[in-house]
Length: 303
Image (cartoon, rainbow, N blue to C red; front, side, top):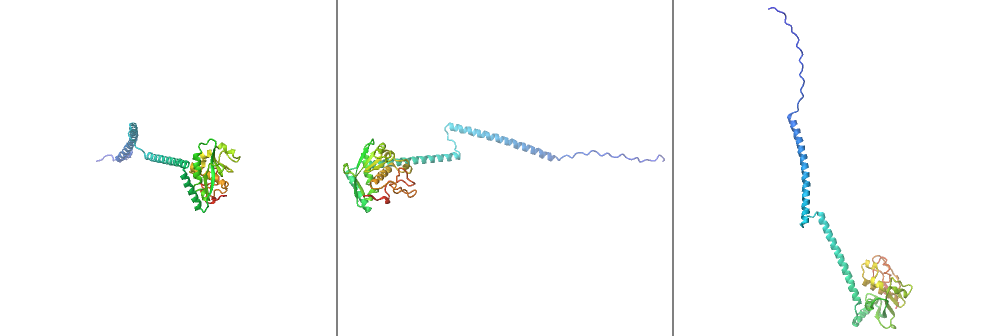
């Protein structure tokens, strides 16, 4: 069979289809959504807990206020308990210090009353016997000095003052250790010196060297300043001493002048040591502690 020849016409080139974007697997989307939901849930939980905590704190505060106003006991914080313990301890210390101070003052009042108490003749003999015994124990032969007691100005009764003078001067801790025994007499012609309790303003009458602030000795007159007798000096009390001890010191010191001693013939030998009796302790302790009695190196007299 004849016919026209077959022609092989070229095929048109294939047009490639546009590439499609690859989609992420579904599980990735799922994980992202889960993460978002989880973050959102955590955020909501955080907000809820914060609000709930504030609500609980407010509720407790209101309950505490209600309980306190109703008289119910509230809980103490540890710091409150500690502070309360400290307060109780401090209160106890203050009370103890106050009690000790009161006891100290009471003891001093009793000591003053004991020195001023009336003396019977029998008691006087007993005191003199002990004074003589103290002289013998220090290898001294007792020498008796007689004195009178007087007052000058508005100083009250002389009886308590006179009894104190007798008890102090014949105390075995004092000048009897130096061999001197003291006897009071009412015979003005027989007394070797006179001890006078005088108003402070009267002191300059005895000598220009006598001050209204301190006691003084002029010749045969021992003048005890009533102001100092009643008040002592501040630094005496600062060192824990008493008014009765100050009175003892003043009497022994001023009578020491009658026996031949002078002011500050010996002074403080070191901080904390006893002050010499003849040191002017009413003016300055010089670092020493108060002392009402003659030291061993002061146990001498001009008699």
